Length: 333
Image (cartoon, rainbow, N blue to C red):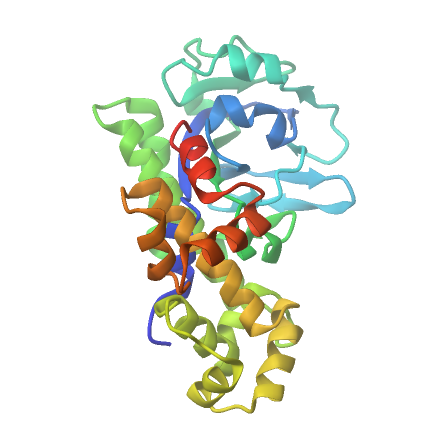
């Protein structure tokens, strides 16, 4: 693969992370988090999509969402909820959870992060000093935000609950969890920035390890990256979106006939190669519109359109707004 396609996508969809809570738990405990969409504006302002994660710094517990069997968590484990589902984290299945209300999340959104919380037969006053050294379980919890529009195939490729056991985590990620716990309690200067970067690194590594563990017959965007032909084709399209690709030319570049390449794209991504390219061009253009002062005409050329008019039609068809209107809206986020 000539370039890192996963990193390419993560940059384009503006992945960002934040650690919000440092949670200590005693005896029987359970907490129910609301759907991420209900608290997105408080925890990740401007993000179109929000995902929650928990790192188990000490002890054990369970994670559960509706319709999925509960998952056992141990020290060093990471659990994520890529689709933003409401979920319960508990000491054991069946423990009646204390519900975290969206109103409380909004009311505390400007408090110094991470906010310490203690669960012990109910919620102690969040933010109050707590004797965490003797806690049975300690969690470091936070959120990821990213764009969904115009195009983000990664979120759909991830499961509703993504559990990464400590045994599958590299040594450096285990150290990240320890570092996150330390930064959460010491509140040294720059801690917020350190925790943001640690969270983002953890997301990328979790996605990579999920990819490594996919079964051979898996489909979806991540599985496509792993395929010899689709992965190479995706890398080429990401590397040169402005090139006037045809399916014949792309097929020759990766060593497949046009029909075979079309079939493999449909198998893994459920869309033809040129459809993927059209989506990716608009995603690249949206980033250029947001982050540069380039004219709409120059951006159209940069992503492979011969005219501003053709680009504007394609952008409005996929995004719902003309590029100029979208740029003005996006600049306010």
